[in-house]
Image (tube, helix red, strand yellow):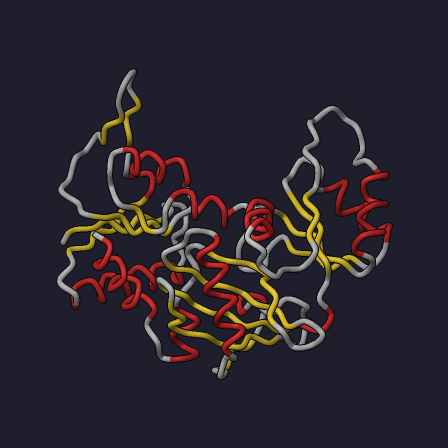
Amino acid sequence: MNGWLIYNGSLKTEKFQQVHTRYLRQAKKQGIELTLKRNDEVMVLLGEAHLSLTQLENIDFVLFLDKDVLLAKQLEALGLPIFNTSQAIEQCDNKGLMHHVLATKGIRQPKTIVAPLIFQTGQSFPEAFLDRVKETLGFPLVVKKSFGSFGEGVYLVETMAALKQYSEALKHTPHLYQQYIQSSHGRDIRIHVVGDEVVASMLRQSDTDFRANVTNGGKMSVVDVPDDFKRLAIEATQALGLDFSGVDLLFDQDEQPVVCEVNSNAHIENIYHATGIDVSERILTHILTRV
């Protein structure tokens, strides 16, 4: 069995290299010949009536750990099995689209309002829209860039003046407004799902930030996740068409789960250090059952 692991060539930090090494090690154990490919190494030629790889290789699947959605779509058009699919990656990468899909599937999530598209005409962000945001969500509320990872581009906003300031700064950047879940301040549950099964989970907590991301200083610990949290994580994963995911769940005022975010290529090093569970093994095993 031969496969590619495609990653973004511009991400060269050690934490990404560790993930790639982990997948290569597990692939070898499972008899898979897995080759690392930067997204800029894979060129697809678009012709009048066909697509073709400029460098053909005998591969059976692609583990797509990037967000280069168009490249994923091109490889799918060539008949290659892609994990996760381009549609699933696209729906998770764009948080506005992700919340839209989850809403259509009846998945519990914070109240969310997607910011309107504003062209660069020199006009200010429409205050009437922000008035409706305030009336609907109240303060404090969360402003999020639609594209971003590791808690970047997520802001806690407590006043109308701050809301106007952030909205004006982001008016040409896709973003959204979200209900702030006070009961989950600085804590969430990260659950890794593969197929229709929860394979690992951890509690993340921060004493210094409303975000619980480990990158922002959050601490990890092993927890016994209740069944309703597991069910919601699996339902959210399936709603978005994912083969594997990292689901972030918040706690509502009754300590019930609420979906904060679903990641199509969640980082797997942190969960390994917290739990000792190598999610890459489960993902590769799942892929072998699908190709």
